[in-house]
Image (cartoon, rainbow over all chains, first blue to last red; front, side, top):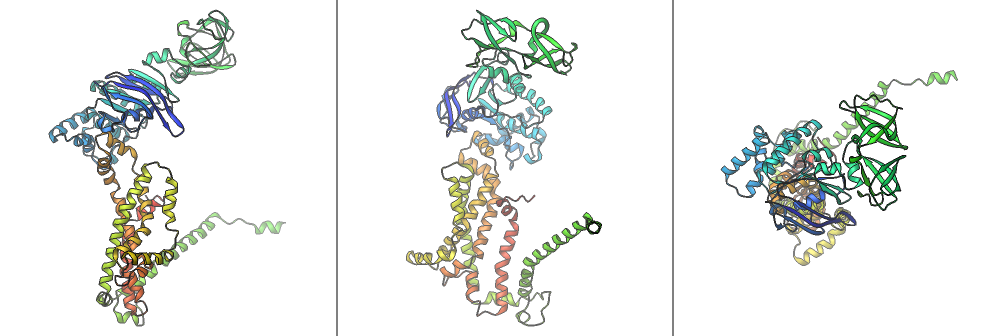
Length: 346
Length: 282
């Protein structure tokens, strides 16, 4: 059982505040992804949980023990680093066995556990090699195997796939998901890749500017972004935003179209819709197609709506040419509204 | 007009390249000769008999007569001086690595106030001319009883070697990614264990190189050795002292005894010394 509780954790580096009062609870065996652009504090948060960084304030609890003052080795964690950190002077076998040797595990037990994780990560034939003789993907496998052999309560991963090429990343992603689900550990995984986050996570914590903006399931984060940032950061192409003006109680004017919306006090809101949530139906938003990109399954059309770019993902059998006028009707249950002042969802 | 244009015919590119190539090769040969010819003469004369050294005509090929060397080793005080040189150099090596390597580690791993100033100060110690320091040091050493001892001289040589020890080890430690240490911490090591099990095996060749460099600095140093020792002279100081009274073949043999170890050591560790100055040598 290793539930992780983070209470009011903040971190400053001199005058720079990397994390502002983070509160987060990660359930036992949950796969939590910390997602955000570079510099948002996600790696700092991970390193605080690992014990490689000391928080300026707040508490970290792992499995019911307060750990924020303990060194990394006493926290029951294992970590996989972005650049793998495979020890170059040791063989793959000794790399994987390193943590077990530190724990003074008897040799037969070491042999058994190393060969089991090596088999799991498909690196049995590499055990006698040194890291200089391995490819990036193989090094990554060694790093994961080294973490798994420790049978930790918590595995922390810092952008483990970002140094791999695209195809290998796809393959490793699926494999990681399977291996980690079977290992029944709690996992915290840092990435800036939203596709990786969506495909791996039980829950995603979207971070921006040292704060967690939203922590929810991938679908929830995608469908109901808690803030404008989440909507614009997640999804490719990102969400479309159009300024809306109040024209009556619960009535909003969006690019010349009057739509039903929330009964809010604000005079202005932002109307938001995902590119795939519009249909070409009369009586919708007036749009002029600018760029048409057929992608096979769909066609991505970048249009002008009210003088601003607006992306729509349309059926590929629809014939659209640049310069065509379209009427794009938003699916009413998929429309979201944001307060332009606070950038939060309304 | 037309006459001027005729004179201004561009030379073929190949011709210019050839001229540049000639200059390059000539420069290289000159520089190599600058270094190698004295060493060659030294070796030839060392490996010749005393009669050949002082006589004429000279030969380009040594006769492999060990008479000069034998005379050198048999000369009163030489063996003692050689031994002193070795002891002082070894002490310097141990002290400068013992003090310099932790400083290099701290510089590469920790952020602390005054880090840039500290690095500057380390280099600044080389800015003081040794003659300026030697006299007050001699007085101080006499007061505390360190005068004319190998330890006293080793301390002075250590001050000379430390800046290099700090800077070389700093670059060596910086070459080891911090993640390797962090990985070791997460795998059950404390700071010391991580250093022993991960960092030390990786830096050992570089540290050895840096130690050898400190050894050579002490081995070659002559000024402090001459000023601070009287009875316990090192080889450099001994040879300098007896320069005017010793025969030619003794000077040559002594010179070779000084040059060769330093030359061999520096050659063995050249890769790390290049790394110190940021020149890749791969």
